[in-house]
Structure formats: structure tokens, C-alpha cells
Amino acid sequence: MSERDAETGENDRADEATVPDAIEVDFGDDGLVPAIAQDADSGEVLMLAYVSPEALERTRETGEAHYYSRSRDELWHKGGSSGHTQDVREIRVDCDADTLLYLVDQCVGACHTGHRSCFHRTVDGEHVGERVFDPDEVY
Image (cartoon, rainbow, N blue to C red; front, side):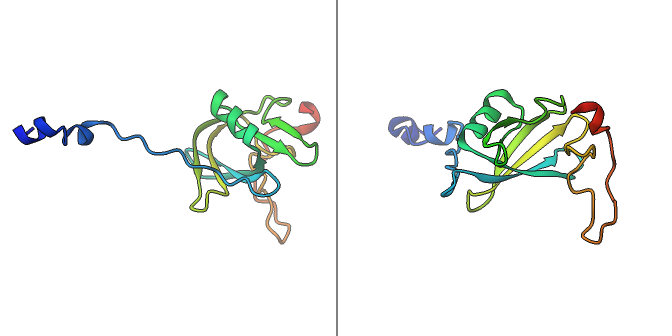
């Protein structure tokens, strides 16, 4: 550090660890944003669900994915009834701050139909996904 820097403290800012500003998520008029759950290692897209401010807060507090169930109109802890939780490694936000990406470690399967991913069919009806559990035994 130069004598001038020592006198003015100018170099102090460069030495401090910079912490980025948190992104303000745009939850829109309905108070929800879509969230894509993606396998953190393979990149496989597992599911899409919706997140409320409370769901995002609970996810950040617990490290496990929480969503908002539009059909049940309630907060939903992924895996709360099945045990097929999603450990969230990282949460990303898109450029418009209106969509989230959860990078997760998925325990067993993400889909309530017993498949690893909710995207287990093509639009032509071809079955392309792996079934990893029997939903009749779980639910």
C-alpha cells in the first residue's frame, strides 16, 4: 500500500470482501414466481412449481425446497409427506428477477407419479423418464 493510500484509506475498499446486494424477487400480482428444480450434478430438469415469499424464506432458512401449492392454496415442503426432499445447494434468479432456479440434490424422485422428473413424457406420448418409486406405496 502506498503512503498516499495509507493516508486516504483509498485502498481499504479494495481489500474488503465485496458482498453483492441481494436481488429483490418480483413476485408479481399473484405473489408467486415459477421455480425450476434442476439436479445440481446432472443438470436434469426435475420439476416446475411456484414459490411465494414465505416459501422462498423457508427454503433459505432450512436448505430444503419449499413451494406454494396453488391447488391446495398452502405452503408446501417438498417431500413433507413422501420423504423425497430436495436439498437446495443454490438458488438462482433470472435476469428479470421473476423466475427462480433451485439447484438441488433430489432424494428418490421429484414427481408424484413415481418418476425421477416430472418431465417424463414427450408431447407425442413417448415415455422417456425413469420411474423410481411406486406412488401407491408412498401416498
